[in-house]
Amino acid sequence: MAFALNAERERELNAILARYPNKMAACIPVLHLCQEGNDNWVSNEMIEYVADKLGLSAAHVKGVVTFYTLFNQQRPGKHQVWVCRTLSCALRGADGILGYCEKKLGIHAGETTKDGKVTLRTAECLAACGTAPVIQVDTAYHENLTVEAVDRILDRLLYES
Amino acid sequence: MLKQTSYLTHSYDKGDGHKLAAYQLGSGYRGVRKALSMSPEAVIDECKKAHIRGRGGAGFDCGVKWSFMPKPSDKPHYLVINADEGEPGTFKDRSIMEKNPHALIEGCIIGCYAIGAHTCYIYVREELHLSRERLNFAIGEARAKGHIGRTPFGKPFPVEIHVHRGAGAYICGEETALLNSLEGKRGEPRLKPPFPAQYGLFGAPTTVNNVETIAILPTVFDMGGDEFSKLSTLHHFNDGGARLFGVSGHVKKPGLYEACVGLTLRELIYDLGGGILGDRQLLAVIPGGSSCPVHRPDEEVQVLNDPRFLPYNGKSILDLPLGVDTFRGIGSMLGTCGAIVLSDAADPVMAMQNLMRFYRHESCGQCTPCREGCGWIERIVDKVIQGRGSLQEVDQIHRIASNIMGNTICAFGDGAAQPALAFIRRFRSHFEDYIRNGGQSQTRTLAQ
View 1 (tube, each protein chain N blue to C red):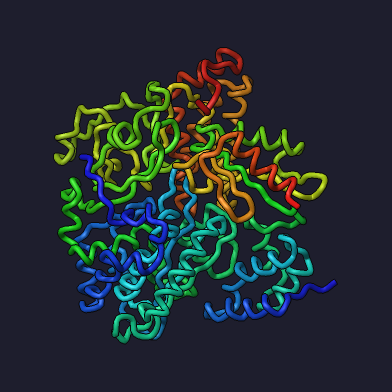
View 2 (tube, chains in turn orange, blue):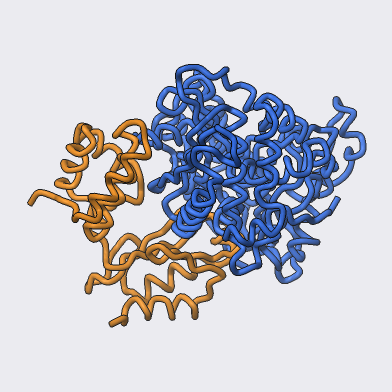
């Protein structure tokens, strides 16, 4: 099925286009806009749509999508959890945090729980080293974490109504 | 010398500190008025006097960088703010955008005026949702007041500021990769020359500055460039003012501290950082972000060909003031002033493995030495830790890293090779232990 944006997002798309002197520069913001309106993933139909809207080749848009880590080429879970594991976080126990998440969710990093609620990922440096260890849940950072705090956060994601 | 300041951080603890009302209670939007009353050339000269060394890691003088911009012509000029913060150990720009966004916006107006740009893009990494929210809110407030728009502070010099979203790529912190990304392309660095000042964003003259470099400008113009520079004890190294210092890893009080330039690592780790976690011994410190070489506390400063180093020669590296040229002088790098501290409970081989995984993951893949080399180094360190490595292979890391250095389009390659070389040079005995004991070592852990 062809991809389309709702009216509100369509307006936002035009606001994005107005910021740049050419349409290509809107490529990444528009992909974000479309991804957010599509359960956080980029389908081939969406790539065609963005290419058409911005006057680009689908190959260019696909090239952009595959370069950046935050464009999902498969549908993720309802919530996405990133565990930072780079040095400063690792020195403060990130491995333990990741191990706990994997155990509690019953999946490995990179996988989604069977009920589709949570996708667990590792992240390279979230730029919050002074408050390590850190995880990102959807758009929010959680800092100075302990295993107990992570447990509460995951419970909220798993058992929310 | 430890001299804490609060030019950027004074509003950090206040709940509404990020809003215009709080910002204007202090010296907010005073510096820009002064700057706009001067000619653009005079603004650049004042900035040169302040000796603001680029806070993004390269340490290039901000005023000098501005002076590379050509005279106004029919092509537009652009100011681009690099807010793609992601260097391991660095966490300062995010705090400015979240807690003091108006300082950045005021700085952007000054920067635009100095280089003749009417449009400024702030490239914020995708993960920093709150930063973008706060910036957009602040831009809205400033626009409503007329601080940005057609006539900022009555001056017929239109300025517009836009926030741009990244999409998750460390390499976009490299300025030409950032420009490609902003243009809607893959974030692959460009060959230089041409430099951005000649051919930057959309092929037009562009200056790319770090968030902190720009956010300190209001203070500089409020105070006067010369006076700002003299805050620093490294004024004679042309390294002026105050800046944000981060300390993370095995210290009791990790976090962000603002102080005059000239602080030493000992003061950062023991005075501000509260000392080593669990009162253990300091094993190693990476002075300013992971691309800097790692150092041992028993290293001595010995720079014989520069008289400015006479007061420091023979002293521990922990007592050398943190400055761009002081650390360059000892063959190291200051980077972003975000120190990562390892206590003797940590295993330096595993620390290197962690960082090499980072560089392998983040290499954009454009240049073969970096794309392949980072992976090779990571695999060798993996083998050593698994007990399958040999000393010849550790020596091979030296060859691989040396072949990356200087042979890639951008500085990422050097940034990966430098820490690799430093780890195998300064902690060789730890690698030998692993190899001799078939993958066993005394610590074999990173977390304390």
